[in-house]
Amino acid sequence: MNSPSKDSVNRREFLSTSGLIAATGLTASGLLASTNAFASPLVRPFSTPETLVKTLFDSLSESQRQAVCFDWDYSTKDRGLLRTRVANNWNITKPTILSDFYTKDQKDLVQAIFEGIIDPSWHDRFYRQFKDDMGGWGKGQSFAIFGTPGSERFEFVLTGRHSTLRCDGNTQEHVAFGGPIFYGHAANSDDEGTDHPGNVFWEQALAANGVYQMLDGKQRKLAEVPESPSESAVAFRGSNAIAGIPVSELARDQREALEKVLAKLLEPFRAIDRQEALACLKAQGGLEKLHLAFYTDEDSGGDKTWDNWRLEGPSFVWHFRGYPHVHVWVNIADEPTVALNA
Image 1 (spheres, one colour):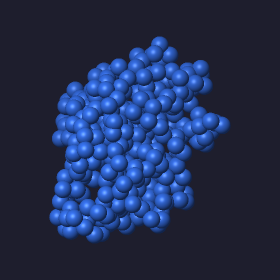
Image 2 (cartoon, helix red, strand yellow):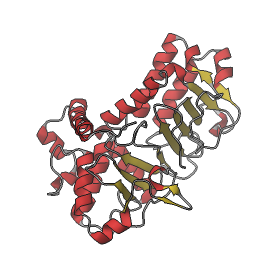
Image 3 (tube, rainbow, N blue to C red):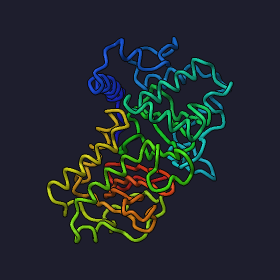
Image 4 (cartoon, helix red, strand yellow):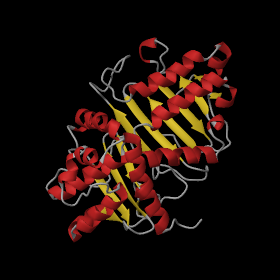
């Protein structure tokens, strides 16, 4: 496959900006007011995350680049291909965002990049997760840049506890979100109990359980799986047997409810990444190629509100682990030969 052209990257940037404005209804003044990071002279109104990654890259000193910038295919013996690695608790580089290693403008740029890849309606919820899990934005997070921003192939990766997020400018072929991502939250303790009070992502599980409640007895037998897989086992299985009930066996109203669950899963992310994920799903046959599984072995409180569940297809995995607190692993591509580095 040919790499995307600069025109396609620019088109993505335009769509990202216009999609953000259309989705939020923000005016120019409203967008300016939506983040303190725009107070930085390096962050211009309507700058896309991809543009900001290049601005950040250009601002880095040589010593900073040596610490956080890597070749596209950089790998290590213990972590493999670093760019595509995903984990529930890790730092891709040593300097944390709020450390003295970066200038104030650079810290503002990183925050603006993050806010650009997350839907504005979810900013406060992510900041709450950062506070609960890392003491606040930037305190336990680090980033890396792969390739050369502004060229045909580059990626920004943000990591920390319960976080692996990416900004790739659509330069990573075949995959959604620039590669596998992770999000999670331990709201009050590592064991949140039955109701997960304060967990910003638990509503996704409640929506999926709403679909379970719509299933009849025969369907529930197909959907209930007795043993949860390893949560990080989200490599694609292609046409191999996938656990759970095939979406093709759901009634129309059940499929419509599941479509709403998928929309809720995608809701935290910017419009262009949502669109890319849906395009990847369409390429593998659409929603009807997925299976829905509810794992019965780790039901917190024994209430049959399933904590652990998964949507999976040939090259689509959205694994929600809600026990003892929320971990969510996401891996989506347009075909199943894309390898995972976890």
